[in-house]
Length: 519
Image 1 (tube, one colour):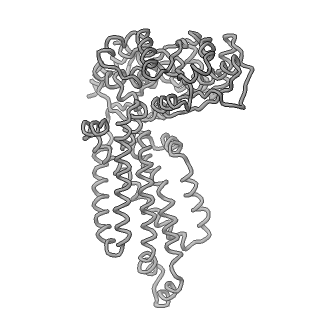
Image 2 (cartoon, helix red, strand yellow):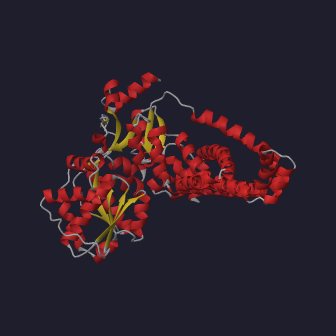
């Protein structure tokens, strides 16, 4: 019912994201068909090139999608262009392979008869080879279509839109209905397109011409749609993480508080910094302790109207640890108030800029406050620590692990880079991990989701937020939120220093005035 209600209340956006998803799929598929069929034809006539070309397109399939998108970002920016390039590359293999296979497996006697009748190579290709190979080529197109519909969801990480935006928002915000709003339409799209293409494939001789006409009309539509919806504009462009978009202490509340007329694109929080560095966006959301601010020459705008509340970071552990390893609570208590804002920024900076190993950074920090770190075990996984996918979490997990291994007889395994708050929460509930570093603001807004009256009453007081989160997490999940590590963390709007100096900006209010003057 929550899913149906969410779809109903957000039907316009669901349709918009579905159109974007189809547009990305069709544009990339069109390019893949044009290029892939030509390559397949060339390979059928130059056998020496088969192994290297097939090897190359096969290797592309093995590259993780997020890695390919990250590689394309500095080259072609964010938005639909890198998404279409990535989808085009992933669709090549089945089309190239099936075109090549369909042509070379034609009975040689048929080709010999055609040549004997005086057909040229071009006539042989058009009149004999392609018509006979079309069913196999079409099978490759079907496979490529389904692949592209699935991978297109990941393209939301680089601000290309599509149904993936719902999925990543939902993962970040612990909202299952939101995840389903992206996953179910994407699955239905893949099933529907595969079904339609299967009917065409079975009746290819009868339906080929009507299919080509319809495909041409659809292609014309998606090109026009793309021009209208992805055309560039001169607005100040903001790259925001999926979680920041929806949270009331994020962009939703920020627009009411400051009235910022921003052109928003949703992005992965890791790629966001890279996009700002490469000047693909003008401002991003971030955290005050993030080491990439200093590492990349960025600067956080002053929150002059005190909108962003400060939050504590603390270890969050499940009841299994409390029951089975009660001494862990006391061991992690050695960190109480030991890590201030400045120190956390320094540790993050070392990892983000100098690419130091988080374990070594954690070890040096613990040594600096006279805590031992010389014992390291790796034989068992008595306790499993999880992390989200950014540097600060990796460092904190290593700090927790070193403390536990040096002040208890237990071994620790770290499961790093979990996709977001929802994944960490579900893993903690299922005892797949036993603890992870959490922020009271994230627990407050994403996990507990209190009523507006409670939010307004306590949001600006970090102590009240901590007490509320600690109590409610124990009541709802039997989790134990330990004492704060020491540093406070809050959202911030981050820009390149040269832009701040150029436009004479100092605060978020200055940014608001600058944007209003541009409009």
